[in-house]
Length: 392
Image 1: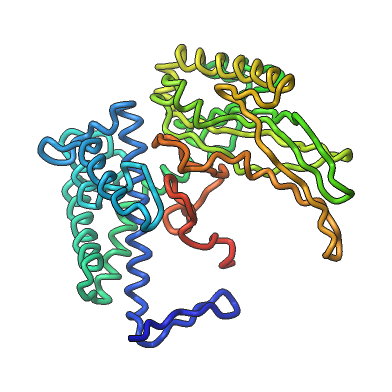
Image 2: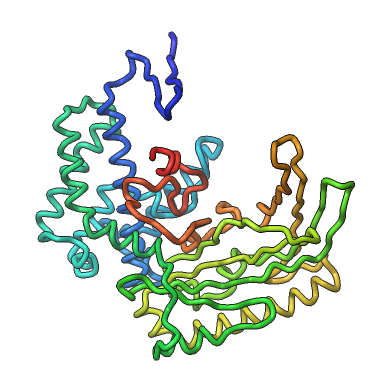
């Protein structure tokens, strides 16, 4: 028995052994993988927006809910935890049939209907057709090329408005106008101290708000080892602890994410970096819950400031929201233009360390063609493809 491997060749191409499955099988797999995961994200967004902290009480079938059913599946997956990646999001344990049931159910269709340009029956038919092809592939039954054409057409029809919704949430980069008279803006924009500053952004349709916690990373200690290496102790904002401790924010928001850590060095080799933690709300939920949400943010800013002051006195202090982390910088000399390479990856919060579906990992806030092009999904600890820009 000889299992032949594909090989990458020059020009971002791949050579596939002739005995592998026909190419359209892989195209179908790619479409179905991206479709199902996009549908999971969308279903979660709408359920969390409408049901809040009880989103996972949504019924799947009979007496089963998302919470009860996925709890069992997660436990089963952990019996063979050495296989694949560990994922804890309940949404990743729902299959396409269950997503279809949730979306088209009498109880929840009213929440999902605005995102479809067809009647419930037509959407149900299209989802069932996609599901039939998906099950054939999942159970290793042969596909026809016509099946590929069908899922291309149906996914396009189903996801037309869904992709717009996901893109808007992932690309909230326009600052909220400073003359906004919204109560949430007046309150949250006033939060600022020596360590934390809140910035506010809105989606193009003004339905989604990104509240950005800017944490001015303190340098607690700097040690030089020879001319080409520095070691640092830096203060890190503990995003995972914020999610555990501040229920008003967690229950009202859709997602929390961090912009990946990437800093610079000053002329005297100090680290210059601000951690940025984004909390995304639907505007309706932010307006309705602004008082307790505002109280949480006020306490976060004040506590972070106190804990940074304690860390400057004793860097071994472990705060509720701030702790000390190691970082380093090396001077790279074996290149035409030598430069300092700063390593502050320790300031990123590992996805697997946060047991909260609201944490989406590390994301930049620009997005387009999410369904077809994204290489890193929320809740997944690793990219699933190369970035889209490599193909340009």
